[in-house]
Image (cartoon, rainbow, N blue to C red; front, top):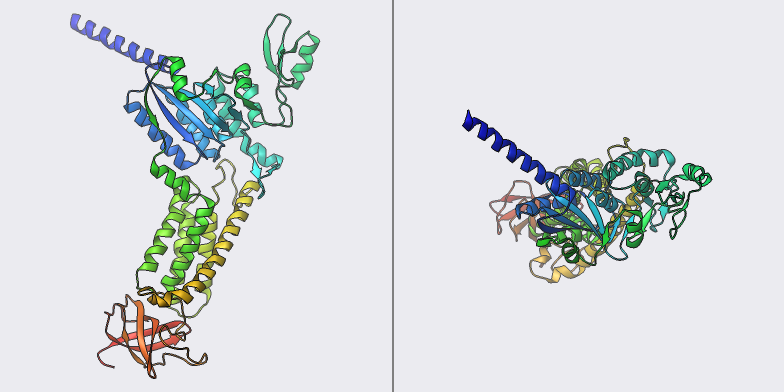
Amino acid sequence: MRRLLWLLIATLLTAAGAAAATTTATTRPHGPAVVVLLRGMIDDYSRVMLQKRFEEARKTGARTIILELNSPGGAVDASQEISRFIKNQKDLYVIAFVNPYALSGGAMVAVAANEIVMAPGAMMGASSVIAQDQQGQIQNLPKDVREKFQSPIIEEYLDSAKGKYDPLLVRAMVESEIVVHWMQSPGGQRRFVDEKEYLALKKEGWVPVPGMDDPVDSGTTLLTVKSERAIKLGLASAEATSAAELAQQRGLLLAARLEPTFGDQVIQWLNHPYLRWFLLTIFMTSLYAALHAPGHGFAEVLAVVTLTALVGVPMLTGYAQWWEVVMILLGIILLALEVFVIPGFGIAGISGIVLVLAGIIFTFVPAEPASFPGVLPRLPGTWALLRKALTIVTLSMLCSLLLSLWLRRFLPSLPYFNRLILSTPGQATVGGPIAPDAVWPPLGAAGRAVTDLRPGGSAEFADGAQTRVVSVVADSGFVPRGSTVVVRQVEGAHVVVRQTASA
């Protein structure tokens, strides 16, 4: 019994110590500290990386995390998930260090932390759902749309502000209609009040807090504060020029600084609209080359690599959905059927082009928050992104056409690449031109495969005293280089051959 009693006491003491440690971790900073950076637009990829770095910080023994923020915001869903994730870190004390911006979704993340410290001149706030036109100007949302999107954001802010910040202040970051006054009673008591309460308190002798603007936030703007003002309003606890100075102020030992890796920077780089435009141009050109003269390998590999970057990066960042990827793949399959199975250009080819282009356009646009149901986009910002994506795709198609024309002119003079030229059978790679109305090579003409046909490749045929090389497709599968082939079908730029034992 005595041993059981001591065991029970030890268990209770251990549990009490663990509870005390958890309580301490969430009420004040202590122990080793780790700096975690959150920079740029907030999306699904940055959310996953942030959660990963928190786990890495925990493995170092950190009890305090300085979350250095420099973000203009981003996806609503990703920002909300980060906010909830931070509030669930019961064993860690999280200090949001705003340096130099935490706007929109970035402000939502900052408010979720245990406290906020700002760099001198840093800015925080403006967290409403907004829409921008193609010139970057803010557009007003319809009231019903704005209210549907704002409701979950307001709830997230109010939950984060409990016991830390005045609810009226954080609501003013989301709702532009709210007017906030900071009033002081004759006895020195201070309160944040709306317009209705403001009029009532004035009659009781309350006055605006000396040295502060009145109102603190008008009914036409979203509350946005710089560091000095944020400290006065109680939204920030202090200023620090750097995370290292912040740690020194709190007596914390910095154990590590977890910055974005090279791979993270590559993902952000590949997601830039200008680079996506370049990749899209290369993809369209290489896809056309692969379908026009298949079997060489180079064009196929280039098409796969660029398509992986065009679709893979948006999937990592939350812009691309599974159905968009299915559209693109289905479109490529239809194009391949049109080229290899049903020569000519009909419904399959047109449908394939439409599916590929539509799928790529949609990868430029993030999904709207699930809290707002509907099939068609409702946010003006979504339509603006769609217009921007359509512009980029159109420019890419034009550049791809110009690039193809350039390749037709210069590649025939280069070894190996002269097999990839995007020419019709009537355009010879060796020798002079032939009559435009002639069908060449003629049906039944014998020639020699100058590359392996897998099933596409190149073959040469005699044209009088000259030899011409054209792109062909073998209907019997793989044909090794040097084999004799016979023309079975000619339709436009589509030449079908079959291997034969003799000429």
